[in-house]
Amino acid sequence: MRSWIGRVVFGLGGFLVVAGLLGLVWAPGVVEKTPVDVKTITYLDGEAGKLDASTGELVRNPIFAISDTRTDSDVSTDDVVAWVSTSCVMIDRGVERECVDGSADMITASVDVFATDRVTGEAVNEGVDLPADATPHEGLVNKWPFNAEQTTYPYWDGTLGRTVDAVYDRTEDVGGLETYVYKVSVVEAPAEVAAGTQGTYSTAKEIFVEPKTGSIVNQTEDQQRWLADGTPALDLQLAFTDEQVETSVADTEDNLSLLTLIEVVLPIVGLVGGPLLLVVGFLMMRRPAARPVAHREREVVGAGR
Image 1: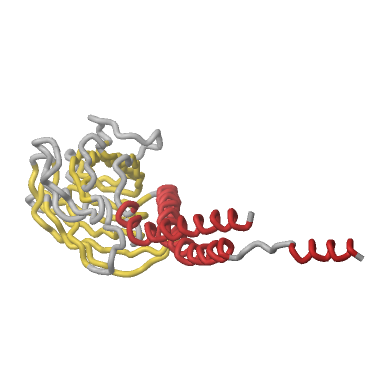
Image 2 (image 1 turned 180 degrees about the vertical axis):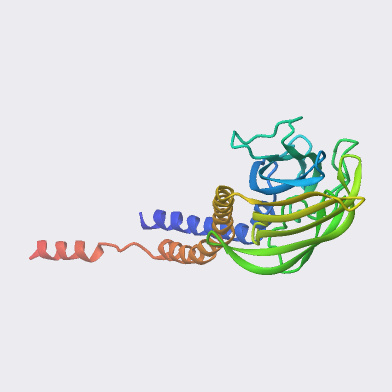
């Protein structure tokens, strides 16, 4: 019985060692990848002043924004994930928040198709079957790389159609999560401020990133647009809603827990507990079972008296 139990313990120890090594060496390259089956709806709100063509003045209203971003698993590969992102900014009239095409309350709307590296988060334009009319992207688009650093990253600005600097500014707690805050600043750059209308564009963004996963858990923006003659066309302030921040934090915490389990807990248990079980199992298999010979001899001696 002892030998049989020893073999079981020894086998369990070997299994734990292998599992620990996989968690240490192999798992990070597998789990630290953007999934190919993502569907995320992000809600923002704030205020905006929009040009009233009849008066030539900005009219301010509360606004909301919805960004629906999802992967295209048919196009995605082992290394690259394809995305389709639709978004809108609407005047908030206190009714159900949804994007309504053709509505006079729609401030901006866009559809974006792109692909990113599943590890670095940087845009990829080759080796993936995107539509022929998809705009080539560069830099980071909708997430940061896994294990983000306190540095400057190239960040895609869809209004400009090029990258701008996302500069690390500080570390800040968001709902109990430590995040890196990156600042994006564009000052009066030439841009298409509306469909077919050229002008100038400024924006100041703060992007709050959980560094281990590269997830964006909050974002604020202060944006202005002017017509070519200097007339203000838009003055917009947006941020994740409080509910959206809570959802983003909860989702990121779940992802962090999974990464910690696979990359930290599993290697510790496997590489510490596994060798101990190997030793115990080996000793149990080597240690001989006690023989009741002496007891039988005493019985024989007693019978002869």
